[in-house]
Length: 344
Image (cartoon, rainbow, N blue to C red; front, side, top):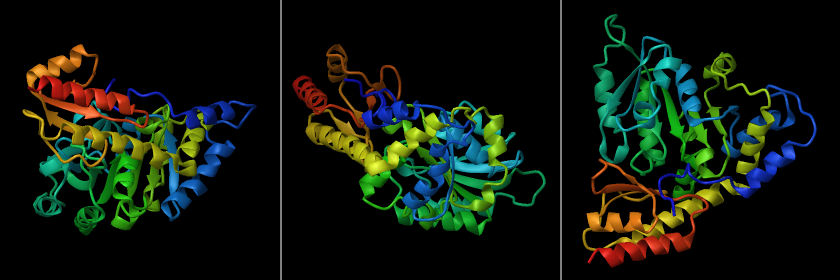
């Protein structure tokens, strides 16, 4: 009954089976295996356009390395103040860019507003030697508030970004949940909306340890292979990362898993809606829930064995709940019943 994160889950059976299958026999090393070589065509088909894809093992690596090709050491990357790259990467973007500065923006529901972004970029001091130079914009899909950027919102941000000759990066750790929620093509909320490079997440949605950096803007690929090697993410046995990614997108598994996670979040929220003292902080659009609960309810949930994070402080009333591809409906129902029983 662990709702702390979608990182606490095990591996999707289909992906575990793919790892076992990839373990049979020998395969060329450092990405020269058939699994890795086939990813280019498979991801290009998935996104309906030619892409270049690089497997890595962690989301932090995907984000930091993607940003390293966008921003020089004297560059600025504009992102939401609550974004993962700003709060939870332990300085990795700054390290791998060689010192680029993260410039944070505020915005409702974890989103960057295109109009505010334009205002900031207009006075950013491009060409002025004393200022960091605008280089890129990064948005998070799903956001750290559990909300989703729609295609038109991304397009507006991309228009501003490209008007200033910058590149647009998307942190897609929960990209599958956004696609499942919107019911759209993955192309619609990436390159068709102006995204240049995507950190494509899989680990939170059923993989063991596999992410990918997907380039839509081929001008950015250039020296990425050397950056990946230097960071320690050119795996000698790359087939085991690539086999996970291949299985992840095969037969729509990534969307099936994300849909299950989203449905469990929706069921949980619907079940506690209207309960006295329960207050939702953000709209629930994917698989993250930010909700205020009375202290007696929180204590009861913890005593019953439920796990989750208090989000504002160790004694605060705001908690974050995250559902996953293998969240059990019985656990969701038990959570709802406990909230109802102790909210009297």
